[in-house]
Length: 76
Image (cartoon, rainbow, N blue to C red; front, top):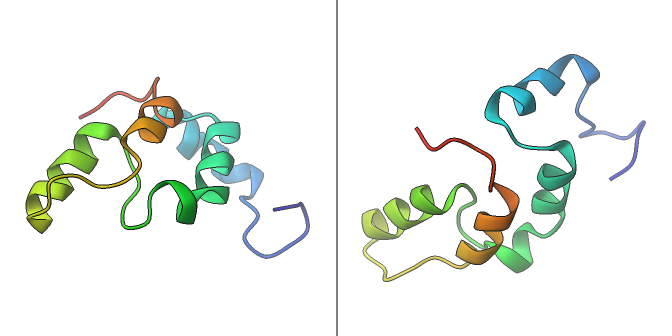
């Protein structure tokens, strides 16, 4: 996760994170930790709970991390 490599978010797209009210730092940490924190799905805790219901499971891993990473994101 460094500049000049494939997968870098261009500056022109930064407004997407702003519109979602997700800090770039939180997003990069989330992506970096995806396989350790989320496994199946990533998103706001309400969305993870809905996805768990859709999949017919009790819960999905990552609820605690989701609350930290997306604390300031409005849930539609």
